[in-house]
Length: 511
Image 1 (cartoon, rainbow, N blue to C red):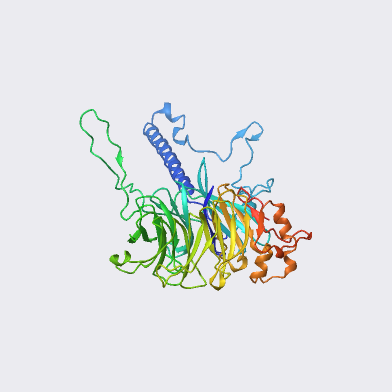
Image 2: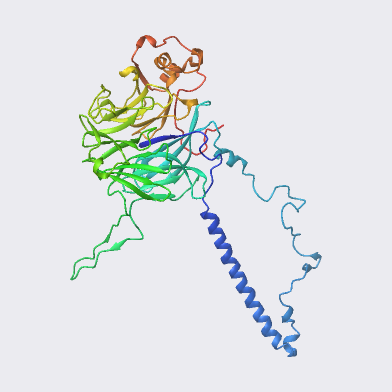
């Protein structure tokens, strides 16, 4: 399954991702061991020569020339002259060899290159064999999607967020924070192709401070080592993450332990622990422009907005908005400063005003089952997407203080767990979807005629000829909110693919 996903802004990833340095360090250690072994042998030979020289006056040993035993002639002479082929220090000096010493790795490098027009999609992928963070490359011009590289995870992933944060040397890197069934938050370097471990672990088990319980007396079995958590760590699974849009070194996390924590990532320290919810905290998001304002949603059937700068006593008095069932997702409206949305496990989506605690602007009976994905488009005002365990994706227009249904699709991924809009203006209408079927699907929503009628796309209508027909061939079912907007006549082959299931395999399918 794909349990969570996120886009990476174009231009934030290294054009040629690096590889870990552990192998080079191991090779250097092996070379040092070999050098020490050679040096030891040379010392042994010198000692033998010295011992032979001490008895050089003895004619029986001197005649064998032991003191010159290790001296090598320039060449060994055989019956017909020099024995063995001529030796050259490198292939460049050998006139009969035209290949260079090192192989040409240009083809391999070409597969790993991330172009400025490429978009990256991060997806948490789980199978029986294990869990991985898959890094996809999507080219909206060519319509290609493939796995560039993947990283092995240590536990079942539940949520993720992308971040660009300063490294210890001052350079800005591309990272992914992942929350899992464990209380730890792992931060992975996306610019490393084959990382074996995260660069930072926030919370989780304290391996250095791990202590054993005292052994019991008598014949009772010895107790296992007690699990010691790092100071400030969550105590249960991490269910939600949000990277700060302004203070890039700050991360917020939501947990099944009923708390919200604010972290200083480079230092690996907890800045705040918020206890304003009475049940598991499922989701949270920083306000896009107000640096200290945080939105959260819980299984206590409330959404809350609070200022993290306030005193701990004031967090309990945070503004709250009740909903009818457990909260699944929360999201700020990037085009309306005081507006946010909440989705629940009963299939409802509600809109609220952060200035009016307890208010409900309007409600949407979005799905028949839990709304597991809620994505507001940062580039296109009023365009939101919802996904559900009922196996459907729906698009809505929420401009004008009301919600209007646009279209619904079965994305052929079974139950849908997550969705996310592209962060780049060049691909503003592109949506990524993941679900139970472990297949990532990317859909250019401008292939839908109703989207083109409602929102400005910046392209001519003839650019979209045949895209709906291609969608039907891919077995992605649709149902329009406005059936009159559908074009029924046959169209030629589209200029680009509106939806593309991912190809497994690194570098495959790239031109």
